[in-house]
Length: 448
Ligand code: S3P
Image (tube, rainbow, N blue to C red):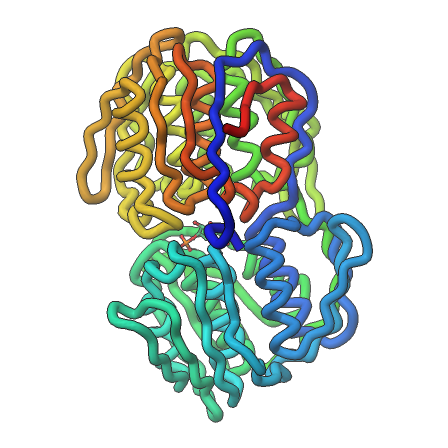
């Protein structure tokens, strides 16, 4: 778990051209879901390409605590012997989900309709994040939650002994909330219906189909209506996890701003509910192409090729695209600093409740590095300085947030003066090989 050890300060210095192949790790969202759905299935699920970041390792430990047998065979190759829907055992200890909002919220959903009690905690970042968004709908199934004030962890969930199915309109655009409700619905009799007004990542729905659940999605005037028939027998699967577009964002954005760069990032999952950043970068004038577009394991996949793009322009990012690039705004704001003109980002209130308040964290670090930023409750504007005119020279607080740390390290690769991050240790939650991978491409990142 991040944030429990010694901070690791790092400084990113102006780099020569970045070149080569960036093999980024497996998708974090799909990795969590592979372990959880594997644990809820009958038989042995075999996963290859699992992200071995701290967040996912915490979910693996949690699945063991609920009674599944989870073993690692080789790098990225994992086996899960599931206990079946409704088969979770009561954990004998507190479940520590570390830094992971996805892990804790999905697991709470998965256990909330079984007659067991579990207590959840996390690191200083996770223990500040709102959980009522998940425990409110879980209460409709009959589960009870007792946590700290403001619906914060540590928190105990008493699962419903006789769950009832629910119909729930998700009030915030959140795949974690949607997924928690669907996972809870697995062990409720009858049909659980989740309605989302804005489409969020749909890995849970796609994977539930793969595991043999009866689940349909209908586009209606109300939004996307997802209907799940409860108490299926989920069948173990063989899963190949695509590489994470949210991790690919870092070498891609670095290549766009470092002169002379040409980087290939192969096998990236391009599910439309995740690919908003790449559309945005192209609109800004990025030299970014999809090569070898294909489908793997039910998900669109391509090799991304990013080259130095000296004429990036600020744009207004369509707010309806926010959910499909929600984790990518921090690194987009860095690219925006290297563009000319303003980049306007609206409809992004959710950024304030991620691993950190990402608008506040990025705005503070960008301003300290000589970039003008204006922000409000659900919007922010970055005034681009143009290529070659980003001063840098600041120290940024990462606030236990991996994406804040990586974004500022990308910033320092092309700024006039180096950029320091006070603690880069959270990067291990999602992208444990970030430092070596970026070094291989030619980035000059040093531990202080
Ligand atoms: C995730 C959903 C998103 C995202 C997170 C992963 C998921 O969170 O920010 O990194 O795997 O479902 P929200 O559901 O809170 O938007």
